Length: 319
Image (tube, rainbow, N blue to C red):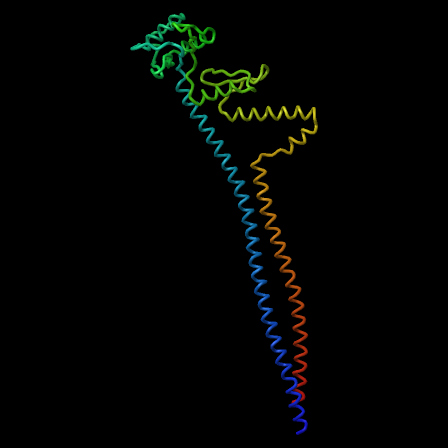
């Protein structure tokens, strides 16, 4: 009886400790589950960030491919436009524009052109003129469009205009004869004549020809882009010449980039930098809980061993 009483007393003393240990173990497991849940959430966020990094890379790649496609389409569009313009210009190959002949009420435009031609000793017969009309009748000296059947007569009239600017009428204004250009070619010719890097600009058989200097070759001008590219080449040559005199300018020219490219590169770099920073912080966070997790597991194993030893000793004593 005495031993049974002692065992009961020992049991009564140990039981509160066991209850405390059980509660501590339950609390620890609860905290461990919470920590594991947080780690899982952070892993999901990290996966999302990595996925976002992949998306940024894909977007950057698609952007480059899109730019390439846009450049190709742009080039094809320009080429098609040039061909259409050439076809329109070819349809006007027999036309000339006469500017400076005064307008008369109820005039016979064909007779006016024939009279002017005979005045400069060029005979224009009826069958050599396909069509003739003024562009409009609102102004006093509106140009006359003449479609000729004889290309030789066209060249004669244009050559005469180059040699002489015959003055006719009371106002004594010169009369100019030129090829009938398309609207685009007319604007292109005016732009070429205004360029400082173009020495000569003229028209031959509907083609715009230029020479950039006395020694340069004759070029056919088809688009404004040619002028821009030539202007860029001229600036590059000037920079090289300046760099040969001043080497410091060469370094500056090599480091120049377009504003669009700089902005695009900075945006991509900033986005990648932010993603890398976030990924590093996530990795650091995940590394810390793993150490704590090992420590907690070790601590829990120690506590479980102690508790098992006490339970075994308690069971042996009861027996």
